Length: 348
Image (cartoon, rainbow, N blue to C red; front, side):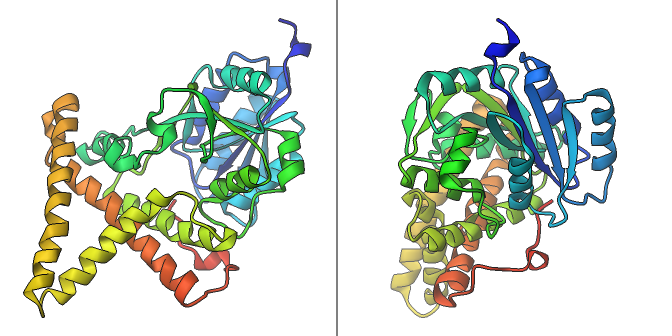
């Protein structure tokens, strides 16, 4: 097929202190079966203090279609918008440096974009971890499971079709940004989810195709995982307040569970009724947790069984507590949405 039949694609990579992952991300894009004269990679770096910029500069010297841009505000939404404004492509794809794209990622994205004429196309995301520790290897097993992912379409759905949900690393025709606007720079987390909600609310359509595959390097330790998922839960409330609606009702489950457990646990010292209620909540959770952990361990290795329950607890409690903190800050205290970037603890 002649190059003129290919759309010009701009891939925007937001990054900060990603020396461990940026090369793998870039290599996965370079390896795509797509004409390089129809490809533009914009790496928008948030003032990295490690070797990230030096690594990217070496790639720019070898490949003219790779460019390094500076993000003085450091965080993701500013990087995305700067990349969108600088991009020359007919099609724009937003990823981060923790991602690795399947070898046919571009091929299928463009194929489905042309076939469906959707406003956004996305696919399946699975988590990976290169760290050799047992905890690091257990984290993606838990995160990709039904108990860990909470039924997210892009983790497990095998049927392609239109969705009313957000998808990761979407491919957008440029006209989508003309129609919906840019990424909301007030949202340090979940900015892609808010953007896709805006897209759907404006009458836009999002198509899911499981053939489109990408992989995400998850945090290698429980401490980093806790901090990441706490922020996910926290900013879910921020997004919900901003748009005036809960995006997906299943997002409330961890917060309701953790809140109920804390409330009944505290009151149980005063009343046996609440002690029994506490046990009634905690008991089934532990049963389901250990059941899922055992099921995964039987398939992936029994060495994972002792640590998987701890990983699930980390995922659920960090997200739930983050959500509750978000309710306190943004709903009860009515904290203003605008916040100094310096006040936000980044997970990197």
